[in-house]
Each structure stands twice: as C-alpha cells, then as structure tokens.
Image (tube, rainbow, N blue to C red):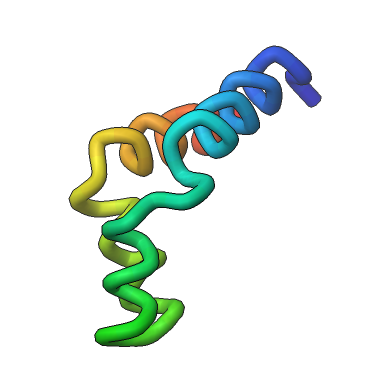
Length: 56
C-alpha cells in the first residue's frame, strides 16, 4: 500500500474536513450519507481525496 497517498488523504482530512461547517450542516439537515455524498461529489477537497483513494 502506498503510504504517501494515505498521508496526503490524512493531511487533507485533518486540514480541511475536521470541523467543516458544510459537513455539519448537511448532517443536521439531511443525513450522514447525504453529507458524505455532498463531500465526494461537490466539495473540491472531497473530490481530491476521492482521486487519491482511487489510486489505492
């Protein structure tokens, strides 16, 4: 497994996703799965994380 890719994903999550207001709003107004869907389809950070995840 490529630890460099995992490090990049972890860095993005720690830097941008922890405490994300959009993620919290989507969770409270919708559901956990709708917040996840928003993150991987509409958020630029989530799209980048998905791209790294596909490399694994």
